[in-house]
Image (tube, rainbow, N blue to C red):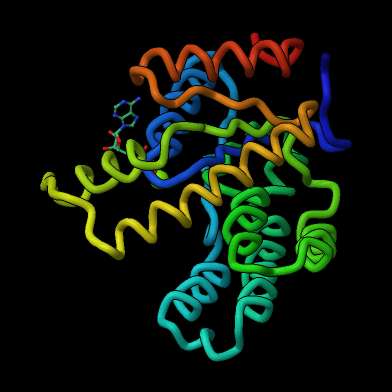
Length: 220
Ligand SMILES: Nc1ncnc2c1ncn2[C@@H]1O[C@H](COP(=O)(O)OP(=O)(O)O)[C@@H](O)[C@H]1O
Ligand SMILES: [Mg+2]
């Protein structure tokens, strides 16, 4: 089944919780595609352009917090519109492969779990993304404790029992995991759930299998 947008390139997004292996696997897929002679753009959200990075810093500084989650969501959408307009759409128009670390589904999972209304998320998505929708979304799924443990090891190499804050975080992450899986169930033509609780090589193979299966005619 070949499913692409109107644009000649190929747009793959990587989604999933903290420590699920998105950044690791995006590099591996980029290397593999480049090794086969494809032009690949690797990018990430939030960010991807100077303007989007500035908005990201503004939000992360806490300055936007008094505005509430809806306003924050609109700021993220403005950043996304710039990223799509300046980086993603031009690359797809050139016929490149675009691999993006987090995209619309992270907004649905994170802002959605913060209580932002789905209809606002839908409207902003239409404005910011337009026709530059992902051809394929790989949802890297694993138990949240394992992902958080990987992320913590990556940061500090230290271990320890979960404190109260970490337990809250696990619950929040669990809600986001459920939202990612609900998106995958709702849009099976776009999304593939990858079991990320396997070795690096097994996850890489599963991703490559999905890319070939979904975008078969395009991969040489
Ligand atoms: N399949 C895997 N098995 C074990 N460790 C992994 C696996 N995938 C990634 N890691 C490690 O877990 C940490 C988080 O991976 P990363 O790719 O940064 O995740 P993400 O970008 O989704 O937060 C890194 O230290 C990485 O080396
Ligand atoms: Mg990452």
